[in-house]
Figure 1 (cartoon, rainbow, N blue to C red):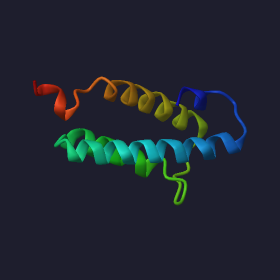
Figure 2 (figure 1 turned 135 degrees about the horizontal axis):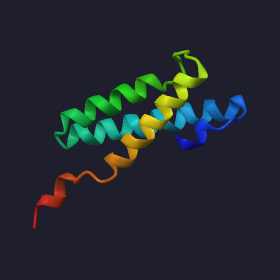
Figure 3 (figure 1 turned 90 degrees about the vertical axis):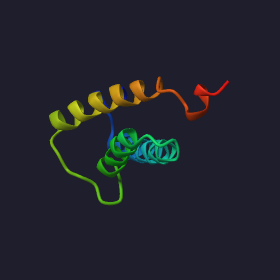
Figure 4 (figure 1 turned 180 degrees about the horizontal axis):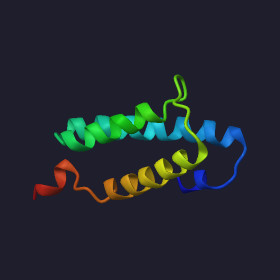
Length: 88
């Protein structure tokens, strides 16, 4: 995500859209299965926002802000407890 802040060729951003969409969709599914509706919605919205099939077009400054916010969200989600972590 943070690589999206640099000046890259268009193909990089296409790859980034696919990678983020797939990661967010999978995270949304995992969150749904784990009963975490908040994370399900957040990751679902990210997956839709980054989908390369029907892309959203915004200016570069807006995308850079979104890339930064999504990077923070992915980082925070990595530290969420998994459903089986509460069991001993």
